[in-house]
Every structure is written in C-alpha cells, then in structure tokens.
Amino acid sequence: MKSNDIFKSIAKQNGVSEEEVKREIEKSIAEACKNPNAPINNIGKGKVPTPEEVMEHVLREVAKSKMS
Image (cartoon, rainbow, N blue to C red; front, side):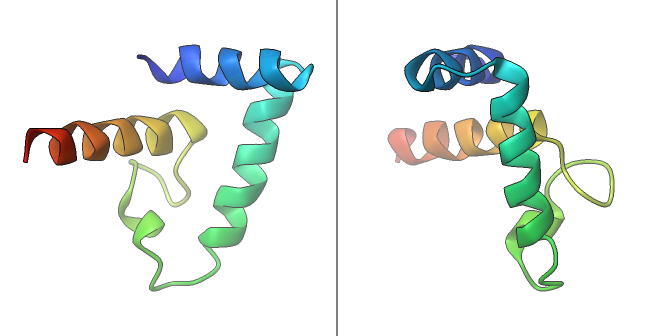
C-alpha cells in the first residue's frame, strides 16, 4: 500500500478531505519534532519530515518487522 492510498483511506473513513488528513498529520509531526531527541527528527530530507516521508518510513519499518 502506498502512503497516498493510506491518506485517502483515512479521509474516506472520517468523512474529510485528504488535504485535511495531511494537515492534521503535519501538526502532529511538528509537535513531535519539538523534542530534539525524538526519533522522528531522523526521518526525511528537511528539518521537519513531510507526512509522506513519515508514512513511507512507517511502511518500511512494518515491512522489515514482517520479514523477521
């Protein structure tokens, strides 16, 4: 499953737009990044990871755990 499919699914389940889902995730990411020691700070290319970068990271970690 791709991250955009997940955002669409969440939006549909909650009766909101995909953009609203991403905005809410961005808020959560920004809050998590306030802690300089948070693992989320190591995700992505910029100072604050995008929702897509976080979701891709999560999907990779889940796939790794299923292979173990």
